[in-house]
Image (cartoon, rainbow, N blue to C red; front, side, top):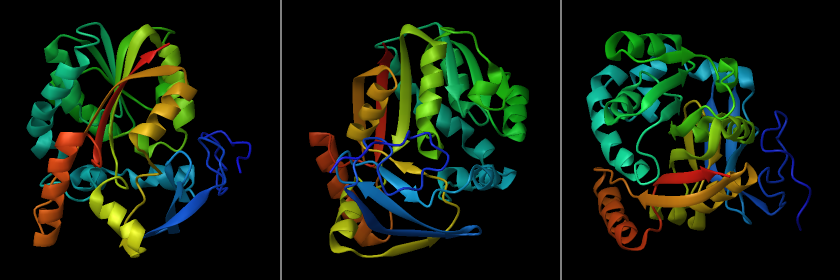
Length: 295
């Protein structure tokens, strides 16, 4: 049965109905997150495969997740080797291959990064030849990027900036879309500030898509974590493309890969097998990279 969808941007969207496609074919998954404000569970739509939290943390709770401590270690969900500053050069290096893919569609022009943190990836785009601007909620990280990297980073949300219509040729969001409580609203505003024929580039995790996650879900093996629920939505290439289309973008490029965790040994072996399969087939990865044209 398909019911009328609430906008994916609805602040009261705690219904079991999928906010993206409107289906009530929604199932709880064996993932529970316990944090200061309460407990949430991951659900998934069986129709479009979008995953989401229920209940959704409030906007006030979400703002409280992103303290300066977050950029000391939690910005990679607690698995980073150092602070943001420690890993800035690594992040710049990683951005180079993404810029190669981006250059297939845009080689220059006005370039905006949403949620740029201290601007490591943004600095690489600037050096590549783009005219760059960043937007970042964290006052401390924006100041770091302005001071250390000489970047134009604006504090606040995208809507706070009141950018003119059609200003940008390319917009990049790296590991941002999964944090947005109102992704449809954000992409609608991005469509306004991207000129026709411009591109939206999204890099994102796919935590429910790889083999280990699929096995856990199939077996119903419960996993409970004590941490802030930073990720509010859980995308696949299909569900992200559906969101693109809903917001006035045409998907034109998708790439996936599988990160290999080094321990424990069974995880290393399974991830290595998974990575080989993903390399050959393009399926079952845990990282996605997508480009969509602004219609």
